[in-house]
Length: 367
Ligand SMILES: [Zn+2]
Image (tube, rainbow, N blue to C red):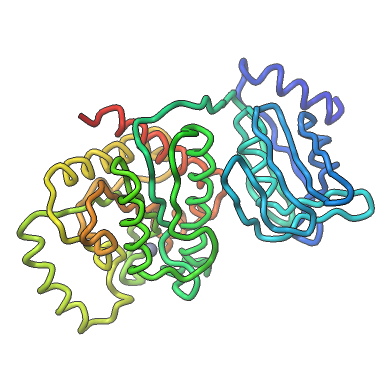
């Protein structure tokens, strides 16, 4: 069976079966995918290019359109502008797409569920069971997505030498794409969209600005964990919620003074992020949000990575602002199994889906 027929077969029978063979695309110079190669396997894709301006648009079998410009690393989806790792190229009649732009195509333009990974200069993907994001209205005005660290702050380093900041951003971007598609009415504020340094004060300022324009808002910070000692084999995800009890407030000042005396690097993320103002309803909602995400992770990622449960922490980033807030530690970069999963694109997608479902579950339960 030819590749093209095979793809039709997949589309027609995706409902019945569910597991399909993996397709592969060669990466040109290790980073670009030729659109013609992609179209051979995913024939529902098409693009148009306006010759004088070199503005392009791409469509698939969803109602979405991705707009881009040749030699620019940005693409536009609805009102969201996203930067990819390399500019989109057009040379000798060939449209060359950076691998992370192909990811966005798979997520936004292909109606079926697609899993993919990048390995040995190949983009490997499987189109399987039917997965369609139906836009819904959600009773939430805004979400602040905070991919932890960035720029000169790499965060934890994985056993394979990768930096935490990149995984936080990759999952953050995927989550933003999914949220935009699922809940078109939701405003998404990202504390960073690139590899840039954003200090705690800036994150705090952004959070408060968000609060000024909308009251019905939540805050989600994304991080990866690291064991404090090399011999520790800890693994799994854990969700922290904003703890604002009175006792914590008293202890806070004391802790800050003690913490200044020890190496900042040895303090877990959650302790670097604290909050001051007490609000019992915000605290209840933070717990509910944390529990909802943990519950949905149980359905999306727990078969691959264990849960370490829901815990409380102090969030300095939200000091003085009042909104439900959680910090997701997606796994341990110091654990080889976790580190491998966190680097896997389709696993990152599952994390993003789990958080999206968690947010939805939270809003449905909230009083
Ligand atoms: Zn972190």
